[in-house]
Image (cartoon, rainbow, N blue to C red):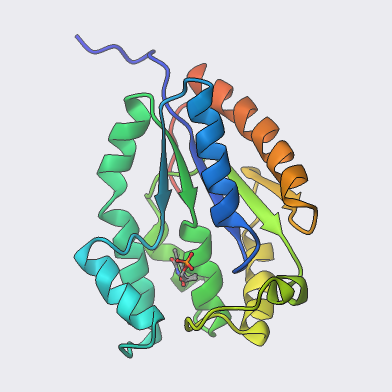
Length: 212
Ligand code: 2DT
């Protein structure tokens, strides 16, 4: 006999431009939830630890060249290879805080000129986030924050295009947080929003799929 009504974890995704503060906010949030006694894990995509992830990493650091469609599908495959583990964790009651997900996949690839619907297609059937926190920052502000690193997509003009694509992806699971505010203010808002969603999932909100 299986029990279906046990509380599950929440899938919380952070999205936003490079240098919008996703990684810092994810880290702080995980510590906060742990402190409250929640079972929680920090994930990120791309997950560079898998063999697919290593191909992606080589591409991002300009150590390999790949056709735009090919790298898009690798990013997607990198999520698919973690899908069953993700589902198991959520069902076991662990909340996952995820730094980037399918929205990055579509925003970045379509910003290069790939067809928007084509970019969404391989993501269909992945687990839908219960909450997407979009850290909203204008590309110029993000660029000022200590500048971009040396990775492939870290250029102002390209980030502007990515921001436009992100806007097309907003849905009812999104909460937009002004990421130009001081870190502590962003953190406070993020905590409040996330706690509320964690509770909703514990009350039995069903897991759903992208993009249906
Ligand atoms: P990080 O700097 O966060 O490691 O991201 N990207 C990411 C894509 O183009 N497609 C995807 O599906 C994902 C998850 C965004 C590395 C870069 O990879 C981009 C920035």
